[in-house]
Length: 76
View (cartoon, rainbow, N blue to C red):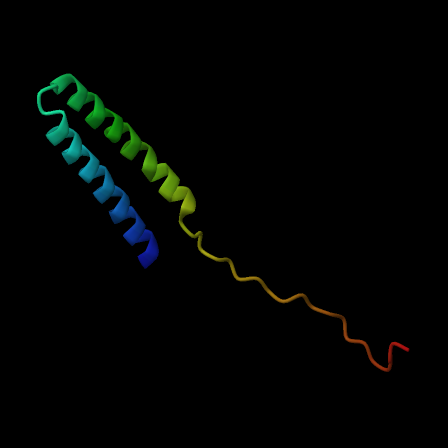
């Protein structure tokens, strides 16, 4: 589960870095800044369902198959 948490934090950090870069680079064009931040918000809104599908489901206990007792058979 630690790898999952690290991946989630890295994805959000990258998205934040992109937003900050867009604000700095497009400082004099507020419409484009809004478009970039809106696109990142949509992207981040779509990520949680993907994370849910990637989570490990609780493993169910699988019982070993039972074999009928065989007596006196050598298989030759």
